[in-house]
Length: 576
Image (cartoon, helix red, strand yellow):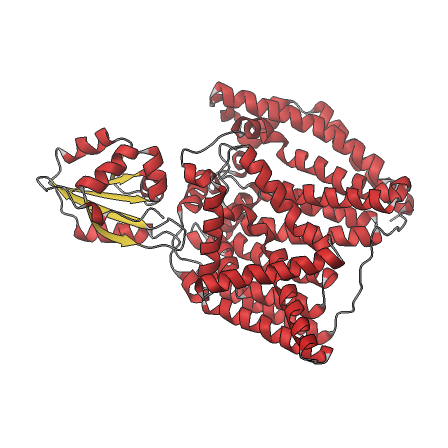
């Protein structure tokens, strides 16, 4: 192809985007996405959709201008370093080890993928995944809508059939991709040995496998975090348009999976800004390439991807929960500690040791190179500040995207401990590396011991359903309350009754010989239906509990007979 034509391709693409933005009508855009029936939707939603189409038109014009303005300079790309990084050749044995780890990672995450879905998976599956693609991409009525994940899950059920395991396939793919990302980032920041050990730690991590079998976007955010960080490090070192554009794409895709990716981008932006100012390179034209091609392009892509639903997203900001415990940072810390205890055998001693090792790695990096420490802490600090400031629950899963960098920090801390021990015992550097590798291997084994527990149900709705159906009589009533209502109504499609208030529940009890009640997540039920919660504790008998790997996610089955005496309070379920 003529090189002159090739050079003008970006200009032609840019002009096409501008023309599309100028000529497309808002109503035509929405009708193309959702069909003519969109005009039958509620007036408020139609207005938001049309506003989103206007956002899209404006951003198409801006994107066209960006394509023309930004990419015309690619041919004149120059290299300028902003920071010092090592380069290390990857050897064939190291590649073989990495491939082996990735294969093991796939096998561990595919096994047991068909286990029952938990509440968030069920709501996303029923409400979003089954939608037509055009409707899916223009619907945002809760934060449970993880756009890119939902889109991939929709494709998977089209390819593999409408099943729970198919909905989880994208989580597996993202999870394995995040393992590769940990290696790539570790290879840039630490030694090859530490990069492989950190990858191995996550391959056999209870929590990483749990989230890799969770039909939500959290492994997607982690994968994008690691890939964006990898591109960011290359951008700092090489300062090329290609790496910064790659960073912009990874960052924008991450936000399209889940909004918590913005904390990663904000942390990178602060690191980049400080480096520009501290090195004095802000005076050089090429030093601003990252701002333009990296963060500027990322911002434009993020807005472009969310344009159609931006009015809907803005209307959801500020929504809170009645479960006050979820807004308490202390609860978040307790849940994180509990999670570490589940993922690594050894109880509180292991949790304490983990934090000490992490602290050693952080202290060493603070003294030598604060870059990796900033990559971990800045997104976490920004996320905590923003989430708490909005009054939003501070769920531990919001910080899962940092687990790859945290694993690198833990391994680095272990290697530091080994180096210190070797120095105290007057051992050689090589023996110190052996000790460090041995310590890391012990931690990996300790993590692997916990892996079998991950294959239990996250929430055993199916187990409770089977139990009730086996033991109920024809004249009995079965009632789902709280967060058990939606799964049993919309997913399992049972003929069970539901009760939102204690009056609803009592009305059912008046005609039933025996009344069964199925519930889950006691903290949520206590906050949203306290009278039902008190009735269950004082008047019903707890029949059985179906545990789940989700915190506070056990499913409880209660029963009361028509003329039964009040049950003892000692039989109430634990509240977490």
